[in-house]
Image (cartoon, rainbow, N blue to C red; front, side, top):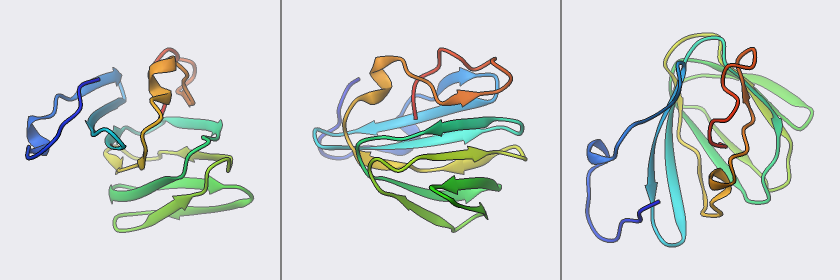
Length: 128
């Protein structure tokens, strides 16, 4: 994955279509990354965890989200800080739910793991 140093525009980042209902844009530097996800209705992000902290910022739509034993509905403007090692999962009940995870770059997505399932259709996509 190419990295950026200096100035750029988010609009210039290529949008990667992961599946019919999931796309993303990745902004990566040497020490961190931002990923913009567009996730359609019906997608379930299966329970998983990361060794690194992750920050989610909801921009549009709604997502039912479980962090550890706590579960709530997140909408535009809501944020979630997911400590490293914490199990979490999400359900997207409507189209255009978007989130911006931010994390210290670990390149987990390059291992080909996938917490997404949409009745099995999204297997093989990159990891969140």
